[in-house]
Image (cartoon, rainbow, N blue to C red; front, side, top):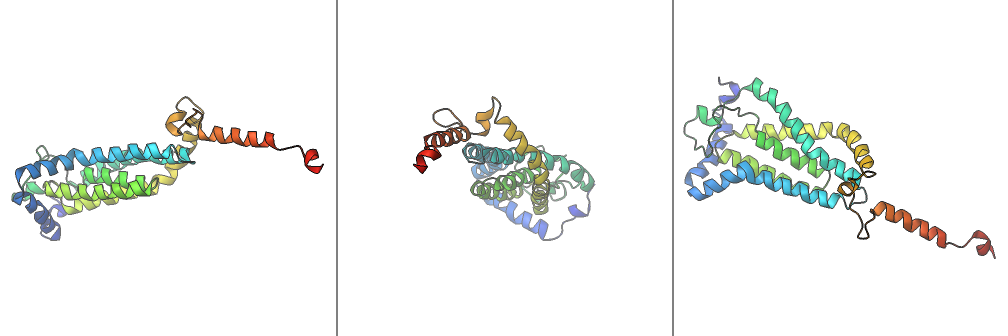
Length: 235
């Protein structure tokens, strides 16, 4: 059943028609390309960004802290998606093409699902915000992909603009509000893992095979041994 949110005789619907109208005027190959990007491509791209972030984080001096931040990326997305379940059930907003037959729908199988909030928008913005806390450059790139995701969902005719905005807001709130609690648990966990067999996943070993922290400790010990005794200095 439609709710007040679904009764969109307002700019929300107007913007949707404007963006979805681009699909009607585009060649079929472009519609297929945008549909694939909107369903799978951007999510794959974000996964690759997280992989790059992990490769960079494990080489940082604060590797355990950085890796803890990266672990928060998928965890925050999962929590945001769980939070969306009751929200979607309460709002009970149908997909826009259910009430507005003039839209071009580029993907099948969406008719029986909720429109508010957009799961894809929630996931992509969750990755972007959480990744930004660890690596700002990768976070900005992920943020651009999240905005593109929102555009694609409207282009495909499966979400209102407010569905996309709601997904962005939900993901941002979950990531930022729960990050201190998550890091209080994940940082000690990652420090503990550096003393186990999975240590190379947390901190990259040096070329010689020893982790950087251990190598710096050995170098300090060598320098200390090379210092002459205080009696020699006095002489």
